Length: 363
Image 1 (cartoon, rainbow, N blue to C red):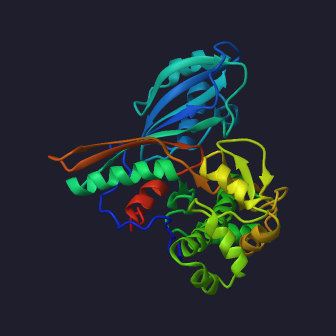
Image 2 (cartoon, helix red, strand yellow):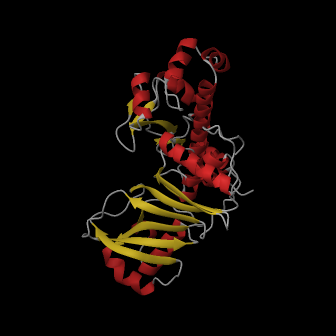
Image 3 (spheres, rainbow, N blue to C red):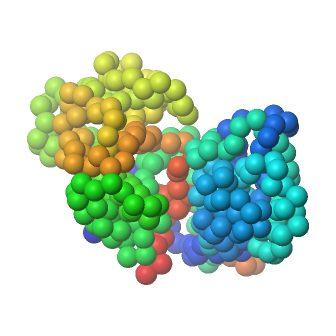
């Protein structure tokens, strides 16, 4: 993308070699709730390699004689990965599927039944295991300490580079489509417009990270000058202990889910935020979405496109906490394996970039 990402942490950049391949990138979905065990929907726990979720759905539709729209999935998983994800199909197609599913790139690990089909977003989050190469011993230790610190303090929830296409510019097409006023045709156009939504969100988040950094690294009078804010406001913001500063009117949500509310008392909200009870949200602009208010809206408005009505809008957590962070190092091969859990919709590459401080996108 045509702007530099703003990182929240100030440590020295770390060197490691990242490549997203089936041998080095593992991801497993964690379902939102346990399946009932009975019902008209067959739930398949599937391990797929070198295959996108779209392709998987095509393969399953062909094998079972179903329409693609009859196949339920919770989230999209990359092609260049070994991924375990849950898929639902109507129970009556089970025999046909057993007979015709022959590809080695799809392995059914478990079967269950459920009363309802799986829908997009029906997952808690994802567990990752990623192998990084060319890591020296000192950096492996530093990586582990840094990752654990981020588990405790959290990270900005940027969209990963994967969201913006090969050339990082798919959002420009999305903007054009959104402004054409036409109804969206097919999933390709939807994807492009949502890339534009994500681009605006990332810009807003980068801005908020930058201003938080200014407040955290300067005294009140320096920060007041740099930001051109009233000194009283900067004083109140500087008193907030957490990195990401909250403003009056920010939309906050209980973490990891709950009902939206507005920041009315900065001190109280900041306290809840530092205790991981709530997280601020950023705007994915579109039809029918709550906008923030007051000071927070003044910061959101430059990244709000009110002409984007082709998609429903949404709010996205601006700050998340990785969990279950573990790493193991092999000095002989200089490989570092890192494992962690992220809530749904968050990108493993964003977490790794925050640690390494460089873009993981292959040039």
